[in-house]
Length: 133
Length: 82
Image (cartoon, rainbow over all chains, first blue to last red; front, side, top):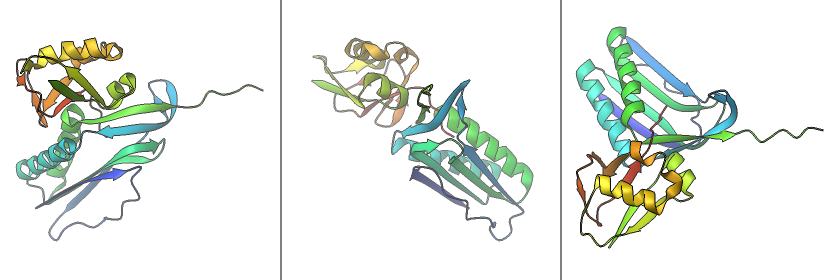
């Protein structure tokens, strides 16, 4: 059972970890991507802020709780701070488990609790005003 | 004594700073008192401070928690990871 939490400056790169641990039957990867709108307003990016190291500690504790309660084999969390453009990835969760049911449940619970409590913040970056010619 | 409060995200942007120093003679203040002092110091965040949580030494605390000036104090607005 392993837990890995990484905070990355700027957008996340491509996922290069596609294989599961020995004995795993399910590898779930969720990626959060910055939408081009906030509400109905178009945006160019999100500026992510974090209260470090409290955010890292809480992500690790939450991940460890998921491992223990859902009997996961591994969980890896990557989250951005700083500016992430629309269409770019700001969050990646990788859950490795023996069967899909516990992996799906853990992934959903982790994301829900992260959004409730972990001190990560985002501020939308509005598109520059269009100048009519 | 000076209570230093860390700000993040929308509150930091509205305040134009990531730290606010609050001078106060009391050796300890409650979380609720601190929020009142913060609003007086930075009216620009008055609209959101009441719904913010406060973390002291990187742990969320209740409104009646006693804070001292040497604590690490953080105002935690709406969190939105992901």
